Image (cartoon, rainbow, N blue to C red):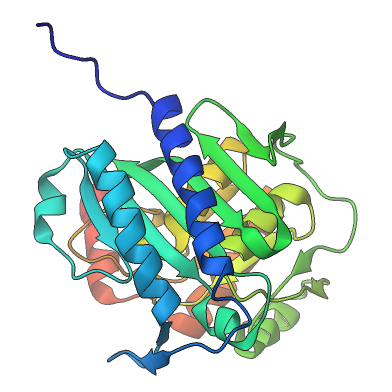
Length: 280
């Protein structure tokens, strides 16, 4: 019997979409209800819904793709993923803190990463009935409708959600902009660049692969830059899953002022600078 061809990006997108919808239904049964919650070692919150969704997603995805690796916020990291070409990167509930307090901008964020690059991504906001999805070369969609690619140069004051220290740096650099709304889910905040609700998003040091991988595919398919302020391209499925300060922006004219502000606030570890010098 001949070997079956490997799954295509379109196959994986359908798998992620279906899993995200089911996960959203499960999560919604816990939303704005009495929840068991506790705090993890890193002081971040977790709820019983996070754990239930993690178990469901692990079963649904790895059963369908047993050769893929697995990386999830709510699972113990297995270094075997580093030897897999394709890896599921999962945040069962991105924005758990908001989920617990009843904020409706939480998401189920799923991605497939191939050789360090996100190639398929889904960001589903069940309480807002918004499904963002993309696969490499296949474009991005919101609730099934194509998202218009690259809005390019903006002609209005850019809308950018910012932390206080970064805001001060942007003002000092002379950037005239409107401070945009924050959202419980980082993935949801990032994909708002594809709708035009935000013009840029800044991410402090310390985000993890699962926070951003799903959104990264969607941004890429919409022609929106997403960079590490210190080293440029964002890489995934490494031994170190945490990232430096990141900037997403639709208008290239914003790049230098945004990345400059992030570097001044968060700095660049010497190890990152040395690695970058070796690669150039």
